[in-house]
Length: 504
Image (cartoon, rainbow, N blue to C red; front, top):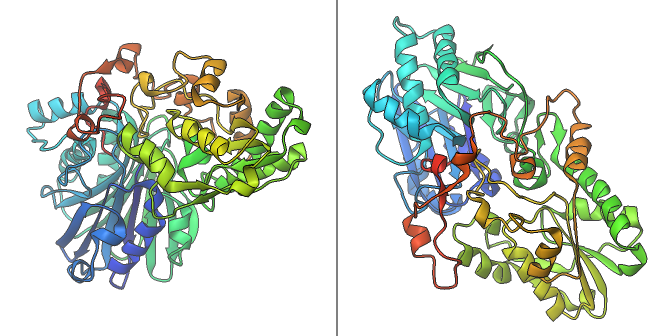
């Protein structure tokens, strides 16, 4: 999961890109980068850290130009400490191409070898995004034999990329002297949308980045589609995949995206309300509502689900935790010890809401169990008589290979454990999970035109069809960050063999 944005304007775009990245900060906290272009010359600044820390006044002054793109990075593997793996990536031929990428290539390792042996291209990092830009550059060089570069040549190159690349990818590329290219994988796993304002065209991961910068969302980029915006602002589009089928990642609606975004025609907020209503029925089937004194969300993604659940079962909804907004999202922090420590720094319980009560805590999902265990303990320390836990998502039993940090089954609390065993581990008096089919049904009804969802972490079905059981076996690869995570960690985290290059 990363956040990406690209824009073509008549005015300088550095501040616009900065503002858009702030709106996408929730999608990545490890690094940020911006590149701008004037004529055929590009300027770039990228570094580790949050957007507000990476870009100072002197950096912004060094980013002139009316065309540009940016990214906030969340690493799923590789080294979180590497400045080199921050995006955007750049290759100088053909034309000069800069690219930002959200997703994960499942055949990155094979492509890397192919690029070296056949295409004669060198990959300098462990990033699959560097692999993607080199595949695009090679295919663009083959398709664009004559100048000037035409939209048809660009689309032919993207079609060739689709034939070679597997996995999830929403990408935006800047082609020096020609324009902006955006494309989405044939399954539309990671989000990408198109917006417009007077004299400007913007593409971004979520509609919140468009609306928050004064752009009108037009539509989502279709699965397998490419959008090319020339330097005059003219938008050209073509379906470049032979077989496209829209199956967005359902975890975007559960947790990743901001609630005020609309992704593939579905309001994230409404999806979470629907998940809460479906979860309420599961709660009623497990516990008598009279046994629950109060429903309390675990900030922040679970709030809509918790509100709807409370209304459905007829129990009071209360805010029982105060969130420190200056601590990042613990789910996307590398290292188990860092996540565990951050839970107490991020949340503090309001004793008044817990003391002497039976509380139902509602979370968006339970992945590793670290946060849930700590929060249940916090509720007890605050005086709760009984602590029940409900998850708006089903048990996460399988790794995600499409760009979410769930790299091995062994790290998942639901792997090899029954619901009762998970309940005992987190210390709750009762544990209620969402049903997989109910989750898909209540979100799908918001846009019946979708073919389905990529929900592999819940149902074990990998939609691209190229992930085999042996690919899900942990490989003994350890990054510097993991090896030095600390004595309180569960030990170095192993990685899926196919994840060795994933950084976006």
